[in-house]
Length: 324
Image (cartoon, rainbow, N blue to C red; front, side, top):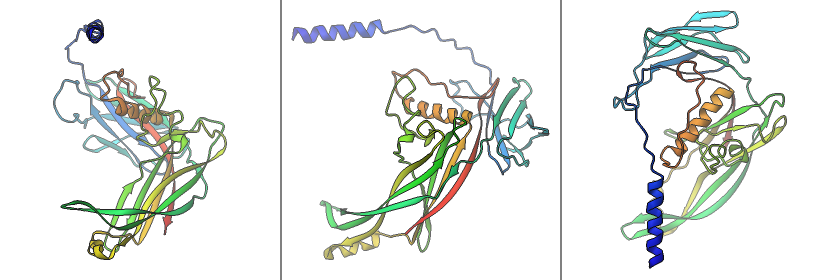
């Protein structure tokens, strides 16, 4: 018993010794320009401008900027971007991979902000192949007495193999995006795959912020650290319910189930600029540790001079795979 009280006293003294008085300067910080936009080849481009606000400000949202002078320069091309409403500024100029784009935004009473980004090349991906296996599990439904076994559910397990050929002359940054579209007789259902377990999603992503491992990769980003200059077969999986074999006495549950006529996967591999990758990486770390009281605050990456936000760039290669 004495040992117990000694330990409690030690813990109390330890907590007191950890206290640190921090003087808070309540003077309100002046707002700065927030600029956000992502450049892509073969399409038009827009940015959004708003003002930052003091963290103790309880107002919702951020004040939009509608009177900015935004100048875009790419090589010999220079133009003033047009405000189209709600803080959005656009250009109809079509960029290509390799273009370097510079922006300068001027707003009365605020520091002038500048940013630049280079549009990467589209990633090289080969033919996507699939492997299908089937598994059966007991299917249950609930009634007033609890769960009841109504039959056997048949699932189709799909393994996708996506070959990516990396340019070994440079460090490359990637992101994958998979939209699953299930076509039914009367409608379609759309969802995004979110559980990617390939080794590339852990390497160089989740374990280098304060040495903490096991963080989720919420933006599905990765680098070429495991396959620099080579072709890598990135794998991911999905599962579809194909059939339910009902027990005779529970055939009335059949109306609760529907099965798609077609399942189509729209697969995008994005090659990201370093700046956009770092923005997503630090934002992911921030999201993982937002409520952890023992973590130091994480600064989200920004390449906006005299302001905040991100001017990123990305190039996309798309594939469509239909699974029967």
